[in-house]
Length: 137
Length: 111
Image 1 (cartoon, each protein chain N blue to C red):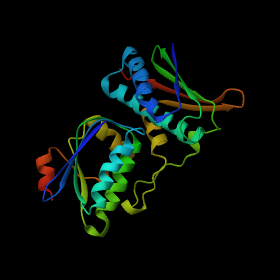
Image 2 (cartoon, rainbow over the protein chains, first blue to last red; image 1 turned 120 degrees about the horizontal axis):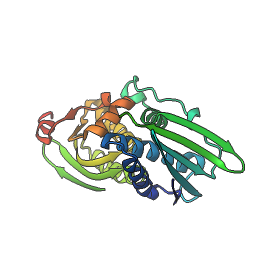
Image 3 (cartoon, chains in turn yellow, purple; image 1 turned 45 degrees about the horizontal axis):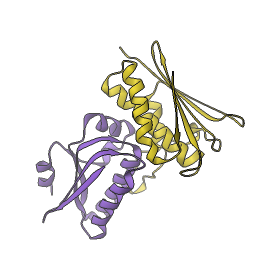
């Protein structure tokens, strides 16, 4: 298990991606799968900063990587406002360009890049987003 | 991330390199907006050296595309998009809003 704490700033995203991509490589995922993990975690952390903390520099993001025998579990924790990503509606990309609204693509990507996505919140421990990527080979 | 813009008579080529995420996307937005503010709406974005792009980056491109295509005055086209980035673009469903060319020459030839 590897745990690291990052400041809740967009500047931290590169370091967070590096942290999870190293764990994904060590767990035996191929390049495409490592990219999927990086993208899902980047989107999740950007959402935490933007929605749970309501901006940069308001708190920290704790990232935990667990190498499961059949995949990789990633847990993201924050102390921001309760933010359940599943409450964000999926964007409609069948509409014409002018009507596209910039919202919801991140959670859609997370759901598609990862196999399990669970969320829980308590006043004591804040938000906890758990994602699992299973090995396909 | 580094961004260079080269202006030609027919269009402008914006070459980005590195990783485009919530931290760096505003730089890309600034470069693209400065072009459209000058009335230049035919833009080729060379993404050959971009190796990561989150949805924040895609939204910058969507807003630029809206601006370019308005009144049929131009278009933003992409070139050199790496497979894994294109996969995520298509997965989300944003792929249909952009023409993607294999190389810059073909993209410039589009205009």
